[in-house]
Length: 270
Ligand SMILES: NC(=O)c1ccc[n+]([C@@H]2O[C@H](COP(=O)([O-])OP(=O)(O)OC[C@H]3O[C@@H](n4cnc5c(N)ncnc54)[C@H](OP(=O)(O)O)[C@@H]3O)[C@@H](O)[C@H]2O)c1
Image (cartoon, rainbow, N blue to C red; front, top):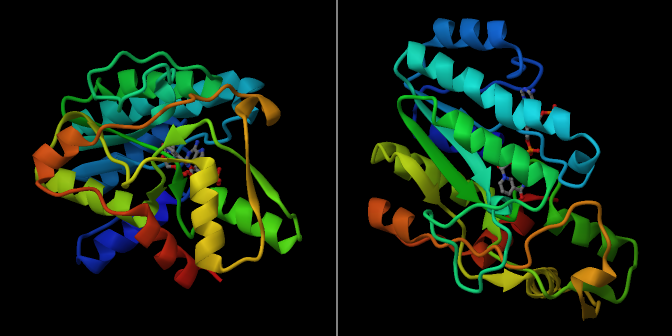
């Protein structure tokens, strides 16, 4: 999702982009990573590749760690060879969700899941780059991939009524073109260290679903349920609202609105 939208955003700004699919470059392959970086000599490497199957990672932690952790060190070392900035995308799932106010970039991490632990390894690995930016984001949806909006639309399409959705997890949905804009703004400012970007406002999955139903004018009822009523393999944070204060300070702009992103998404994705 992010890779495609970032490529589009950069291309529309006439930036030179080398966009690589998994089949073009396996980031776990050190030789290929080094050759690729030596060939293209990028000034910025944005790592949009990841193992993103959160529940599956519980049974495949080694695979998640290899892609989300060790590979990032390969990218960091390759970035150093050409003095590139490494932008590593990370997640709200590095937090345990015990707080009840937005997570700041300086808050302690304590992932609850294998996926979260693998992404935290990636954050540590990214810091092997002399110039690195770790950009944590949350609850992504974009037209080039599977996501929560599509899952809800599929349920609506199948005639599921009511939709039962978790109402005791809070976060910030983020439209991937908005994240792409944020990455570009931060790169322009040569931002370093850890930054959070997520769209406004915070909500629960139940609230988000109600917005999807309203925007699609679907004739379904949405019923709130508790996390305990929706068992899944991975434990996810009950509260993972990211504070975007540092992002706003660096770029001078407020985060965009997921509701507007949702409208655009629905107009673009058939
Ligand atoms: N989705 C979310 O809600 C969310 C929330 C917070 C943070 N993030 C982070 O945001 C970033 C982008 O996520 P996304 O949702 O855009 O992910 P995505 O749509 O699942 O895309 C991940 C991409 O990585 C590729 N990939 C997997 N293993 C690879 C490897 N070894 N070498 C090269 N490419 C590989 C995948 O290719 P194949 O499919 O062909 O394997 C896929 O194209 C990730 O770092 C993710 O952890 C996501």
